[in-house]
Length: 290
Ligand code: HH2
Image (cartoon, rainbow, N blue to C red; front, top):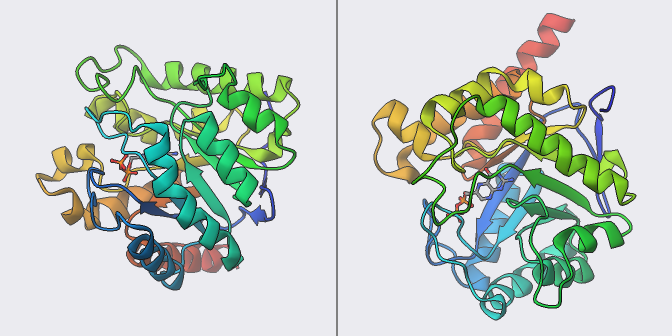
């Protein structure tokens, strides 16, 4: 167990100062993502969207080519590469941290070779390539990339059919601790690792709320936390807002609550509104600390 939360996230090209909360803007190059599927499905529109997110104040771009919504089918490797590679190849030239949202070792390796800074893996590096190479091997063999290890119960195809049972916080904590320890044992510095409790990945509404309420127990592991509440169905259940893209108020509220409880990075679709909310929160913090 680490002793204190790292204030800086070491990624390939950028040491990201986490003393202020950071906004990771979502770029889904997919036809079927749960809230914006098809909106930016080709490289040109994904890049336009990514540029817009940067103008709105995103600190990091998270580029993904496969939906992991409940019930989603896996995308063949070649298809995912065809979606993601042209976007990553261009975005790495923009001078901002680029994250790749994938669980496939081959996609990770290809994007890291193009210069991507961060691997964001909803499977926490547990998957293997056809040749036996694991996602953990790819990250461990890379000298400097940052990594997000997320907790998922079961897999997208059945995670909401049979969600977790019992105390989710303890189980998520133990899982993330084990995954981080495995990576540390492979020589990956603690400063490269960020943890994520995986909202919506096989948990009930109550369990998702427990994870937010008890973030402190996850922070005790000593790694920075990333929270991905944006537009998730739990927010729909709490507010009665059926259409995921209409859950702006709930998403901003959840992001702010996660940051108030110690999360250092929020992964969001709606960058502008989130940045505005965080500015107010930071101004109050400064005032209270003055
Ligand atoms: N959520 C999604 C995808 N990737 N990565 C992390 N670290 N944390 C998350 O909560 C997370 C994630 C699902 O959201 P989205 O990318 O918008 O949808 P889809 O998977 O349908 O593309």
